[in-house]
Length: 489
Image (tube, rainbow, N blue to C red; front, side):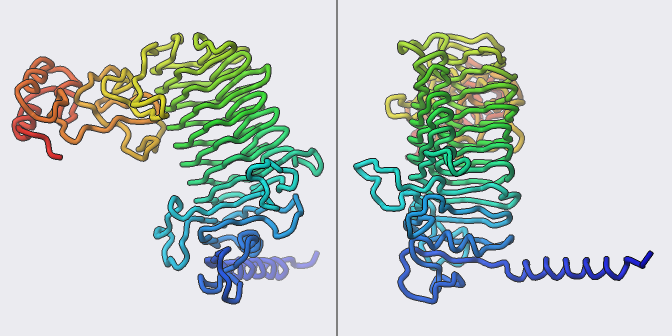
């Protein structure tokens, strides 16, 4: 038998050269749809890829390690009318919107001020007439996009997956991930995407994905999942909102098969299931397990079965959350917050309208700042303040939906939850300490009534615990006297 060593060494050397070549090619690729000058090769802002298909061309040229910096503007997958045209995410490539053009550091971008829209409306004729038959089936595809694939800072709209041929062209109008992939999506808005099968905004099958600080608004999911349809998926959602999405089953999100999906600091509002299977916010089936932590569900609805969450299979949990004003058939709220129909949903330390069996659940008005204007922050006196359980705050979670610190003590509220003070609030928002914590009664001044309130709770927790150490004691008296007089501002 011949000695194989020289051949093995040659193969290793060639592989090393290949890796080295890929690394050498890694670069920032610049994109600016509005640019009219330069050489159009993406090597600088001056020579950025330009035109409405600039992002698609930049992605096609990218290799692992690249970053694609995209200036504000409107982008489409093609300048033509081919509906299968899309933007394909790549392993190891970060795609960042929100640039003005000219930045030298990624942290200089502002994705809120510099709106970067990626649209499937190929003929720019959606507005007013709702003419969607020319639109791309998928605005983005993330199949095969593994670790390091990042999509960050975009508004994604106008995808219309409305046909079963080619394959999967009836799923995931905004983003399709099928068979493999594990991209991370951050700071993105998915608005008005549609499909006929499932996942108006996003369809995921046998893959993984992480979404953070994203919103999913007015997407239409056809049969399953107005925003998301997920089948055998590992999915994670942090500080995301789901607003006004619709589908026959699962107004916002469907977890099917053996999916493992987790929602932390999320908001579900005004989503609706219009068919016979319910689940205005969440539909859970087969052996899927959904984990909900510190989330708020308000005014979701279904024409049948459960207005908010329905679990038809598997074991799921809801902790430190608020479920309020969700309605089922006939507009009723009682028994329409969580419904188990074959599955189990263990719920604790939550505000559930109509009540729900479980540790420390309460049926009390959560006292939002303004439910009418969808301000679900907690007003003074809310039973959700300092009443959760600290041990169920997911590891690594340090902020609430607003990005404010979690585990902040409200000195005007008693600690009724479980754990070492400060105690976590229920719902997506943590009530932040007032700017004048020694003003216990909130009258704008630190005065005699505040001393009375503090002494009335001496040795306890909550009211009068100005320094947040979990007990009303001498240091709190010292802090109060040190702040005596009118509050600043």
